[in-house]
Length: 122
Image 1 (cartoon, one colour):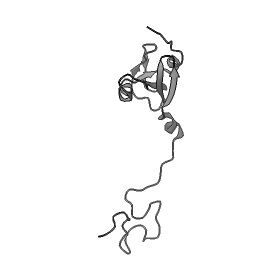
Image 2 (tube, helix red, strand yellow):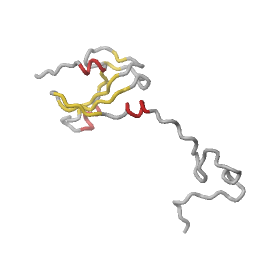
Image 3 (tube, rainbow, N blue to C red):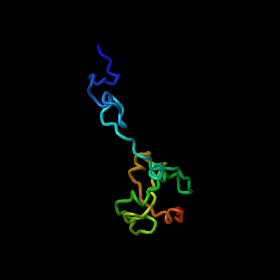
Image 4 (spheres, helix red, strand yellow):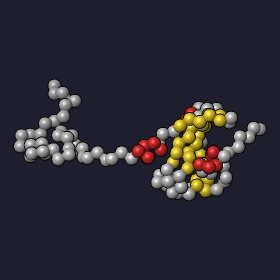
């Protein structure tokens, strides 16, 4: 039985490896091209951080202006967070019904509204 975890070798005289070079591709693998350059700003923006506040534990993720494509209503000021404006995506980490329910109830806040929010106790 042949081993399936080895890349297939091109037939002799055929394929890019036999024609004098790989030209940026790995022999035996389909669709491999040049690796795109890593965008550090985009990579950092997708990571959520945990914040503790008097009103609970929150997960906060930064949304860059380039990635903001839809209009949302900020719960802090009740105005629109328009496309192309950097903002925060916030959800409750210690939600009563679990982390999935908290993630489903995430909200988009202006950065300044989130930083200057008041903690109300009822």
